[in-house]
Length: 175
Image (tube, rainbow, N blue to C red; front, side, top):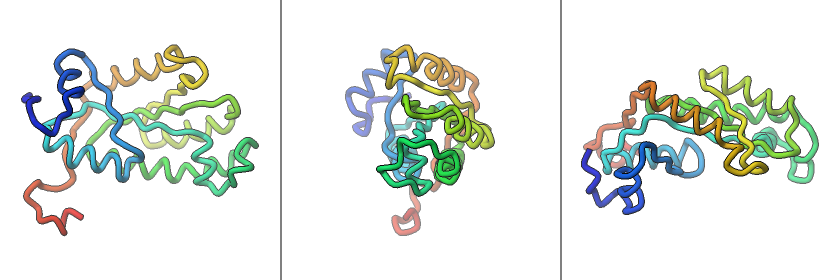
């Protein structure tokens, strides 16, 4: 591929030339962040990603499930379940781009096994491998399983990446 495009940052260009795998944060959420990355950055830079990682936290899913900030430390499997509708939507969004997805549950010490299992069940139901990552508490060692899962997903060539609309579509139709 031609990585000389001005759309690629110099860091990304260097990474793509020097490393076997390059991971970049596309932005917050698979609605706006992924849309911007896949439909604009990848198109203009001629990037063809091999996998996507969707990061989820029990805390955020509880908030999506209606739990007040002051109650986030308490176990609430039902709220996690309600919040998982948000997780499911992000998984569906990523799939529309033809991306295989691994879900990383960024586990914190207050997350209970039942809450984590609810997230795992939802993501697994959408055909995604789920990895519980403990890099928050364990540093790099806590992300090793995630790294292996991403490499495995990228190596199996399941990605059928495609932007959602043609480049020459008028702006208002793209929106």
